[in-house]
Image 1 (cartoon, protein in one colour):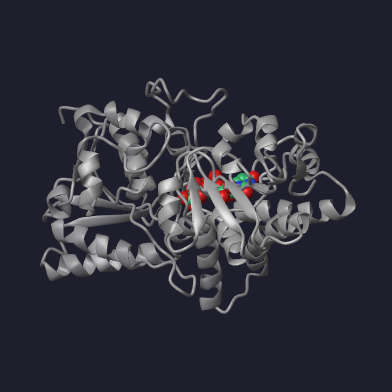
Image 2 (cartoon, helix red, strand yellow):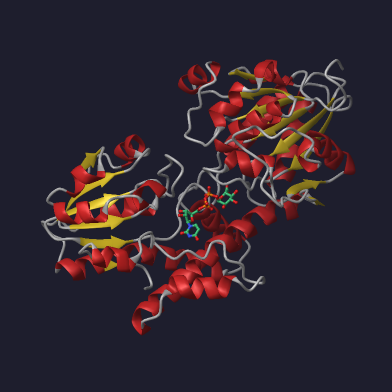
Amino acid sequence: NKRGNSSMNVVIIGTGYVGLTTGAALAYLGHRVTCVDRDPAKLELLYKKKSPIHEHGLEELMALTGRNLHFTCRVQEAVADADVVLIAVGTPSKSNGEADTQYVEAAAREVAEGFVPGRLYNLVIKSTVPIGTNRRVSQVVKRVLSGRGMGDNTAVLVVSNPEFLREGRALRDTLYPDRIVVGAERPEGVDILRRLYQRILEQTFDPPPFLPRPEGYNLPPLVSTDPTSAEMIKYAANAFLALKISFINEIAGLCEKVGADVTEVARGMGLDPRIGSPFLAAGLGWGGSCFPKDTAALLAMGEEHGYTMPIVAACREVNLRQRYRVVEKLQEALKGVRGRVVGVLGLAFKPGTDDVRESPALDVVRILAERGAHVRVHDPVALANAQRALEGLEVEFFQDPYALAQGAEALVLATEWPEYRHLDLDRLAGMMRTPVLVDGRNLFDPKEAGRAGWTYLGVGR
Ligand code: UGA
């Protein structure tokens, strides 16, 4: 191998957040990567090394991958000489909450159709998949191979390798992970992923200038386990993080009743290393493409096995309630929202992304509109996606938060974009008909807002 032993032929099916980020990172680390997607519009952008998603550093990193990063729509051509094939396609929710694995299975089938006899392949499942999917994918692959008469001379190792990247920090989480989880039936499966991620595990790469290695970063452990436990780690981790947020949101509600400040409470709690401070920010609650879907899937898995999961169920319930609580606060302050002009700042499910999937902010917009408010909205990057998601609702879209505030009766801060922190609260207050600020993410300092003339309503303080 001209490129040295450590370089592998990698094929990635699916160029969503996980697939594209992983592809760009592995190519940067020296592997020869081909990303496969079906969507011609996406490919059109990708051929030009443009990213279809808004993700910090992604285009810059793609530009540094040189000839290591390729894109195609032809699965079978791509996989023939692959060492590792990663499946990173979506697993959307079915109506009962169950994660739908049809795309994962279809991808596995198509990939197996492209395998050539006499080789060893590694098929890695990166998509978040219900417990048992890895085993099912192994069977799917076996069936395809035996159907093609090559069951005996072609080996395929199916390995579970769940992903823990966060949108907005996807590349950082990929290059500097807390751990790498590998679930394999056989030790060879672990070995191959150890090789794939060697430079991450040993941190033997030059960090890209825009993604420096975090100070004090320790080498990430590789957690080697069985595929079923690996699948469970992913769901349990996401549900636990969602639970932490719901817990502090539940405490926030009581803080309001008794006059405590939840941000102080979280600070005091978080310093206990057994609790830890991340994911204790009270607010509108969690959204996005993962927590809602994964907690629903966990409940569905419990149900399938006749096992109730009251903690996960409650964590979802508290999360939904949070949106209504924020709207009700506004309703009280304005003595009803019907006919009122309300501006909503921030629509992405969190800052740093243009993703509006399951965004609590959009739900607030919907609830307000349903209750008869005239809703105006702004977001620094997610406006176009929000426009599609809110189609059919009477909502006004603004490019500028000051224009949105002109003559409005209240503002709701729904997503804590850092640029909102720098808004001129005095100037904004002066433009409002009534300066009411519902800070759904506790972004602003209540005292400062008060001094600028706002009636300030935070979450849990
Ligand atoms: C989440 C996990 O954090 C990742 O580890 C995981 O890999 C990913 O899901 C996934 O399964 O793919 P992500 O959905 O990108 O990542 O976003 P987070 O940063 O976790 O935020 C999720 C939601 O929680 C956001 O709506 C955010 O606003 C909310 N949140 C977060 C809070 O309300 N309070 C907090 O303290 C933290």
